[in-house]
Amino acid sequence: MKTLCECFLTFVGRACLALIFVVTAVKDIRDADSNEKMIKGLFQGPKAVVQAPDVAIPVLRWSAITFRLVGAVLLVVGLWARLGSLLLILFLFPATVLVHTFWNEPSQLTNFLLNLAIFGGLLLVLARGPGMCSIDHWRTAKKKEPE
Image (cartoon, rainbow, N blue to C red; front, side, top):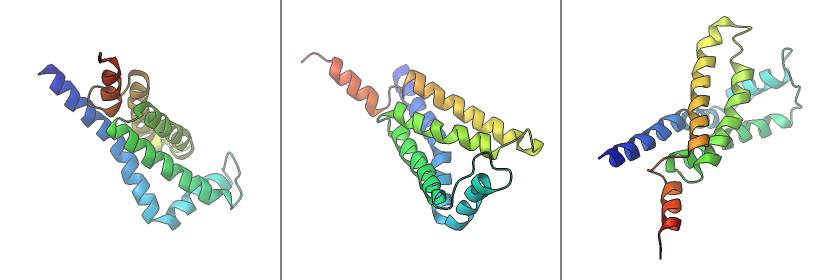
């Protein structure tokens, strides 16, 4: 029973971690104008840490969407889940630091901390693997079986 419960809970945990990335990526695909405007504000505005030319904005936009969708799918199904977790971390860390600047806007502290909690969950998957209910676990177990 413990194995079945652990299997189910690790799958649900990975799915919960991935859900926010899928939802926001789909939202950004559907609302391209708003998403590009936000990215321009981050990389071309007067407060931008790094200035990016206009041609880089669609590349940044689609890179962020791709990292989120691919990372989330890999994480949920548990196929190369560590890679999926890494892709999501590579998106989440700069996005959190650039968007949720609580040191300039105290109202962003909660969003910053929520992202930090998600970051922690992704680090756990990166360090410990996806758990029992995953393709990664099944492939590893299959390799260990004597023929």
